[in-house]
Image (cartoon, rainbow, N blue to C red; front, side, top):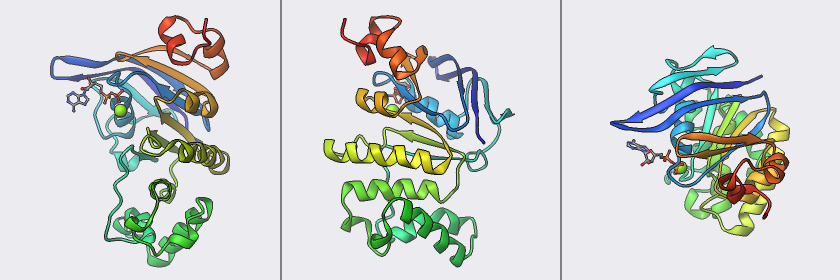
Length: 238
Ligand code: ADP
Ligand code: MG
């Protein structure tokens, strides 16, 4: 089980406040999508949830436990970035098992976990390949595989499909939805793609300039956008 709670989170870089007091509740196994224009603070917020960036103010709770002072490795989550650099000299199996190797997990156990994730992601035939011999979509699946082997209770995806072409994005969207069903995990997903948000989200959070503009189901936001800004992102044309 994994719930996430943000209480009045702020973030300041120097004199500039980029996150201006965000409150949010994410339920266990919910698929929550953050949308908003470039520069509104989506990645900063994700990095704070992940523990890669400290919050200037407010509390981050996972399953009710305050996480502000807990390191990224101990928050029980895994993050997949937009630019998912794989280690070029390692095979797919090596890439997927790398974090476990660092953690001192035995070779047999690593292999078992990698195989399990590879099966879910249909990467089994590719385990011995190096990244340069993979397509964009296959590389992205390896990046997701690296996250899966860590058994996170929360997945954080920051525009994971934005480097893929349209057809692959559609396919990956379906695969991520299936993954969400299979893994019993809570997922937080950043995108600027309206269709991704509408089709994948249980709940959409519309961000604007460091604040939450509106939160709701895709249908609620589509039919009842609070204002023109939200309507411009996901509302029905009125
Ligand atoms: P988004 O992901 O929504 O495009 P970001 O979270 O990357 O937005 O950035 C939000 C704002 O914070 C931007 O104005 C960006 O320039 C600024 N910012 C992000 N990271 C830093 C940093 N390390 N130092 C200073 N400013 C930053
Ligand atoms: Mg970003």
